[in-house]
Each structure stands twice: as structure tokens, then as C-alpha cells.
Image (tube, rainbow, N blue to C red; front, side, top):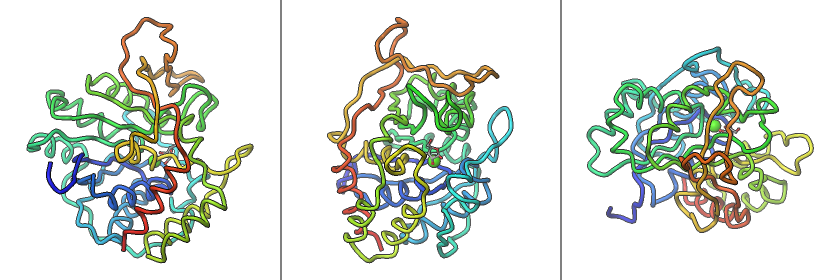
Length: 309
Ligand code: BDR
Ligand code: CA
């Protein structure tokens, strides 16, 4: 791969405050060639997440296609996370409107890109897994053209949507089950990992000192408006961790685990059973990230966002 590009990626997202920062980090990083961005309803409804994704991309000046995808999960009903991300999905920080959405729906666009890719593509999922699952379920042979899949999803302990389940996993467990079973290398960025990437007032101040450009300022405004969960000393910056893993794997450590998603209708729905201690005898199907050098991560974030317009 020329020009310092190490990964050709499709990012499937639901912006979403942390999704917005993740998109900016990706678009600022010369190691990543962002081939397409696909959007699902998740943190807020699809109309809003799609508009937010287009606005985030437009602010960078990048010409990356943004495709609309699933408005609701494969089964069950849609529930937003507006209490965390605000009704507009960006906690009230308004961005100039972006360009029009690209023609073609997300799952079709993912399949089309995989079909024609000359280099295997990396899929980054930072929202409910619906779009990626639809693409894989409708043309499973295309999985062979996936280099790897990085998902911000799940937790080995407590959830943040329910006591048992993390929001992305809980939003579409059946879709996550399809993705986990696809047979390609999967890296899982869980809540335990992102709980180490805490946005604090001093970290926002350090980010602001990195530059005065529009994308960095908007990112800081969005982060400053994010509520900190009760009993935490800051707000976890979930989705950018999935991008940073591809840029600086040396900032992370983890282990291979068997991961199963619970699709029952009970109170465990959406729980990821992560066998960190090899208790089940099941083969590993994911690399689960466990430790993060948080200072290194925020240093990377500041330097990259400062390079954007
Ligand atoms: C995940 O859920 C969403 O609210 C965030 O954008 C992130 O992708 C964290 O549980
Ligand atoms: Ca997200």
C-alpha cells in the first residue's frame, strides 16, 4: 500500500458525539484510506445520524461517500441514546450542513466495495452492527475480502444500556451474532477498555491547546458538552479507541477470547459473554482489548485533530 496507507477502511457509525470524534481522527490519519462511511440509526435516529456524519465529513473537506443504512435493528424496536448524546446526537453543538448522502444503501455499498476491492478492506463498526450484518448475511463469500473487523461493542462486566449489555451490542444483538460468526479476525473494543479513555476538563484543555482549527474546536466543544456517567471521573471516549487501535496498536494490550452475544429476550439480552479465562473450551473468535495507554491516546488524538482544517 503506497503513501503510508496501512489500512483501507469502511467506517460504519451512528454519530453520536464519540462517533464524530472517531470520524475526525480517521480522516486526519494518513495511515487510513477511508473508502466509505455507512450510517445506522443508533445514538439518535437515522435521519439525524446521517446528517451528523455528512456534516462531520464536510467540515474536514474530505470527499468520502456517506451512505444511509438501517434505521432500526434486525429484530425488535429502535431505542436511542439521546440521554447521552442529546436529541441532535452532538450534544447541541451545531455544525454546518454537509453534502448530500451518496447513492446506494449501506449494506449494498459495503458489499460493492468488498466485491471490487483489490486490497482486503478493514471494517470498523462503531454503532449497532446492523449494516455490516446485512452485508455479510446477504453475500457471505465476501467475508474473504475483509482483512479484519474492529468493533466498539460489548463488555465483559457491566453494561451501559442495561446492567448486562453495552449499548451497541444491545441495540442489535442478532446483527452482532452474525458478525461474530463471520470467521474473519475481529478486534473488540469493550467498555472496560474505553473506561480508560476518560475525557476530563484537563484533557479537554490540553486538546484545545493543540490548535484553533474548526474540527478540533468542534470536537472539544462536543466533548465538553458530554455528561460524565455517575461515579466516573470523566466521560469515556469510546469510538475513537477503535480507530486508534489501527493507528497505534502499541498503545493497547489484549488477549484472544471466545465471545458469544446473548440474543435471548430476557434481562441478559445484548450481553457479550467474553471468556477471558478460557473456561468454556470454545475457540477464540475475537481479540479483546484490555489495557490502554490513555495519555498516549489523547496525545495522538490532539496531534491528529490539529492537522485537520
Ligand atoms: C457506544 O454506544 C454509543 O452510545 C457510543 O457512540 C459508542 O459507540 C458505547 O457504548
Ligand atoms: Ca457509536
